[in-house]
Image (cartoon, rainbow, N blue to C red):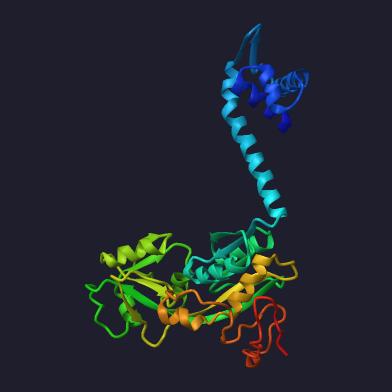
Length: 341
C-alpha cells in the first residue's frame, strides 16, 4: 500500500468526482484512476462504484475510509515532525522518573532549558528504576532520575545529585500526629498506604520486618491519590523529603532518620547528546538541590545555572574513590564543563 494511493482514494471519497480529485492531487485522471485500482487490488475488493455520472463508495470503501484517513493523517504528522526537527523547530527530550521521584524535581530544569533551547518538547515517563535503565539503553528515553537502583550497567553514566531522608505524611487527626518523631515500633502498629512500584516498602520490609508482614492498607500508583487517602485518615504514607504534599497533611520525621537514599541522574555513556539533553544534564548536575529539600519541592525557578552545589560525581565505570567525592570544580555553565582534576 502506497501513501499516494491512499491520498488518491481519500480525494475521490471527499469529492465523489475523479476529475476534481485528480486536480486536487495535482495528477492526471488516468494516473489517479490507476492508483485507486492498485489500492483496490491490494485490499481485495472494489472501493469506489462508478457508473456514468454517479460515483460513490462501496460498502468496503465506507468500512476502510476512517482507517485510511487516520493512516494518512499519521503519515503527514510524521512528515511534519521530521521537517520541524530538521529545521530545529522541535527539540525532543524524554525523561524517565522512578515512582518515588516527584516530577517537581524536573520542572525548574525544564523551565531554564526552554529559555535557551527553542522548540523544547518534553516527555515524562514513569517506571521502576530497572525498567528505566532498559529504556535508556534502548534509546526510548534520554535521561532518568532514580533512587535506589541495583547493578547499573557499565554503559550508564551515574551521577549522585543529593541525599534525602524519608518522612511520614499523615492527617492532623491521626493518633500519631502529635509525636515529634515516629519509631519503627509505631510503624509496626499502624496502617501504611502503599505506592505501587515504589522501592520504600520492600526496603522497609527487608530492613525492619523480615519475619512479619507490614500492615499495608490501600494502594495506588499515584502519590497524590495516596496523599488524599492519608488526609482522609485511611493510614499514613512514607514519602521522600523532596516530595510536595497537600497542606492538609502533617510531616513527621522518622525516629533516628531510619531511611535515606540518594537521588541519581542516569544517561547512556558515549552517546552524542542533543542540545536539549546536554542542557538538562548540565543544569541538573549544577543545581543547588538543598533548596528543593528545604522547601519540600516548592522552589521557584532560578535565573540561571550559576549555582554552587555539593559536587555531583559520575559514579559509573569512572567511579572515584569514596574519599575523593565532591572534588568536581564548580566552574561550569550551560555551555561547557571544566572536568574534575
